[in-house]
Length: 178
Image (tube, rainbow, N blue to C red; front, side, top):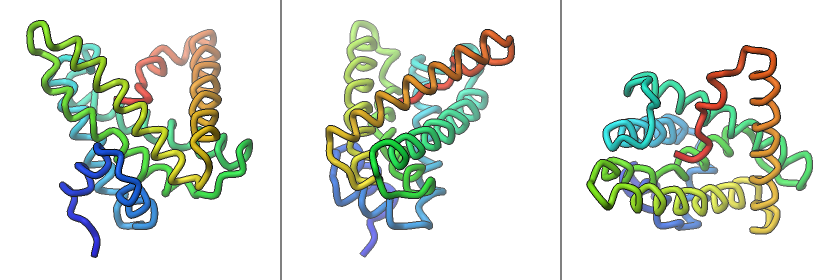
């Protein structure tokens, strides 16, 4: 029996492999993954961690674009360089749910604890991202880490090229892990 949306969020945040496998296989879970991305962007905006002056709506739009691009680049790197087996939808769903720890970003406004929350959420989200990549692509943890590193480098290079051409100032605002 499929888990509820809330159970999936908790499972993803707890790095539960079965949850990642479930959302990878469930083609109807893409709207739920989008919901996680939107909730995390809103939580970050409320907590002051994200937004960069874009406001909540702009932050959510930027989060969706970043999520789609990150999923696409990670999919290409993982399947072409590291022999992963996934489609873009599987990557999109797992990486969307991997942002679940970012819901704690709503607490980033707390005096003294805000920075600690941001650091913990960042590390936790990074680990969740590696689990998501590993499960979506059906590769080892080492290959998942390598996929993430190469994908980050590829995105940074594209971002720099767009900035040089004067058309990519906003690209730098895309956050890979919220």
